Amino acid sequence: MALDNTDVEKIAHLARLQISDSDTLEVAQRITNILEMIDQMQDVDTSNVAPMAHPFDASQRLRPDVVTETDQRDYYQKIAPATQDGLYLVPKVIE
Amino acid sequence: MLSKTVAELATALANKDVSSVELTQAYLDRIAQLNPALNAYVTITSELALAQAAAADTARAAGQATPLTGIPIAHKDIFCTRDVLTTCGSRMLANFTSPYDACVVERLQAAGAVMLGKTNMDEFAMGSSNETSHFGPVHNPWDQARVPGGSSGGSAAAVAADLCAMATGTDTGGSIRQPASFCGITGLKPTYGRVSRWGMIAFASSLDQAGPLTKSAEDAALMMNAIAGADARDSTCLDIPAEDFTAQLNQPLTGLRIGLPREHFSGGLSAQVQEILQLAISKLESLGATFRDIELPNNHLSVPAYYVIAPAEASANLSRFDGARFGYRCENPVNLEDMYKRSRGEGFGDEVKRRIMVGTYALSAGYYDAYYKKAQKIRRLIKEDFDTAFRDVDLILGPTSPHTAFKLGEKNSDPVTMYLEDIYTIAVNLAGLPGMSLPAGMLGGLPIGMQLVGPALSESRLLNVAHQFQLHTDWHTQRPEV
Image (cartoon, rainbow over all chains, first blue to last red; front, side, top):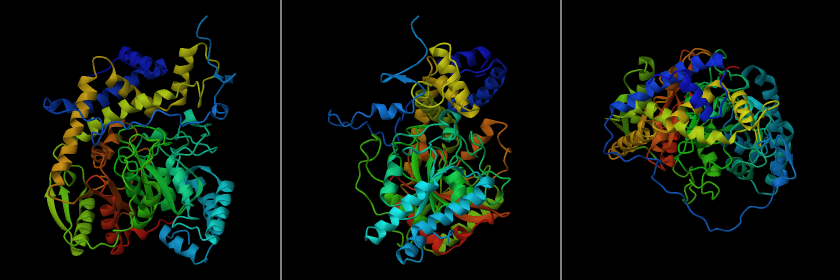
C-alpha cells in the first residue's frame, strides 16, 4: 500500500512526532517501500493459525500485592528537565 | 596481555602475574590511543574503572574472587548504569544519567568485573551497521572503511580491537551475532527470558535479549554464569534454576546431529561463504558430528513479520520519551503537544522515527488485523518450522550474515536493503531460541562467522560445540592490526 503525504501527517500526529514539510515526501516513499516488503506476508494463508505474542506462549507472572519500592522521588527527579514541589513541569495545559 | 581471553586473564590474575589495576590501566591506555579512530566507546569511565579494579584486587587478596573478578568489561550503552551516561546512541538521551544499574550490569559488577565504559551502538538498537548512532559510526578494526555490524557494533569492535576483555550486547534481530561475525569474535544471544531485561532500554520487548560478546566460547560461558537467571523485576525472565554453562564445554561431539537449512545455503549466500562453511562442517564431522539437510520453509517471511512486530512494540516502548520526565526537551515549547512533537522530532534520528511510524501505522485502527495480527500468526509458523526441525537434529548450523563487513555508507540509501542483512538471524528472535555466531574463516582479510541455533535453553550445548570447534581451529584467535 502506497502512503501519501496526508497518511504520513496522520501517522506522525498519532506518534506525536514532528516531521518537517520538506521531509514528508521522502518519509512517505521510504515507509511505502517498507510496507511493500512487509506485504509478502499477505500471500500466506494463516486462517487456521493462532497469533503468537510470546515465544513460549507464557503469561505474565503475578506477585503478592505488597509495597516493594522505597520513595526515591527527589533522586529520580534530579534528571528531569523541570520540576517544582515534586511535580514535573510542562507547558500550561489549561488556559 | 590485552589480547588474552577472560579465562587466560583470570589465571594471570590468580597467579599474580598482573593486578586488576595494572590490567585496567593498560586497557584504558589502549582505549585512549585507538578509540579516536574506532569510535567504539561513547563514554570512558576511567576513574570508576580504576576504583573498581582496586576493589577487585582487594577482594582477591581476601580470597573472594570469582572467575570474572578484576576482568575489564565494556557495556553497550543500552544498559542503564547508575550515575553514568546512558545514551542508547540517541540525541534523546545524550544527557541522561541513569538513577539505577541494569540487572546485567549489577550482576557483572557483583561478580567483580571492572567497567571500562559504554560502547557505541545504533540508535535505540535500530540498525545493522552502527551508522544510525547519534555519536557517529563505529569503524571496523579489521578495515576502518567498513562497518562493524550492528546494533552492538561498539561492543564487537572493542572486543576485536582488544579495547576490553569482554563486552555486553543485546540482540533483537541479530544485533549480537551479526557484529560478532563482522568483527571476528564470539557472540551469544540467549533464549528469550534467560537474562533479565531490567534496566536494558526496551526496543521490542518480546524479542530483546542481552548476551555476551567475547574472544572465545569459554569466555561467553563464564559471562553467562554471571548474567543468566531469574529476576523478579523482569516479568518475562524465566524462573529456572541457575546453570553452570562451563560444565558441558569439554563434552565430545560424538553422535551430535546438526541440521543444515536448505534456505540458508541458497539465494543470497556467496559461494565463498559457502566454501568456508563447508570447511567448518568438515571439521565438525571429524569431531564426531553428523549433518543432514533440513527445511525452514517460512524463513523468507521472518524479515516481513519482524518489521511489523519490532516497530509495533518499539512505537509503544518509545512513547515514554516525551520530554516531560527525562531526556531531551525542545527549546521554548508553546504548548504540551508542541513539546511532545518537537522533543521527539528533534530527539530521535530518521531510522527511529521511521520505525515508530511503521509501528504506529501497523497498530492503528483498521490495520491491526492486516499487519500486527498477521505478523503474529506468521511468527507461529516460523517457530513451528524450528520445532519440526529439532525433532530430527540437535542443532542448526548456517551463515550468520550473507557476506563479510560492508563499507560505511554502502547500504544506507534504502532501509529495506539494510533490513535484509538480517535474513539469517531474525527468525531466531521470533522463535525465542538461543543462537550464537563464532569465527569460521577469513575472506579477503575480513572475518566471517557461522551461526549455531539450538532449541530453547540449549545454550550449554551451543557453547560446547563452539568450544570444541575453537579447540581445533584458530579463527577466533586472529586479531586485526589496528
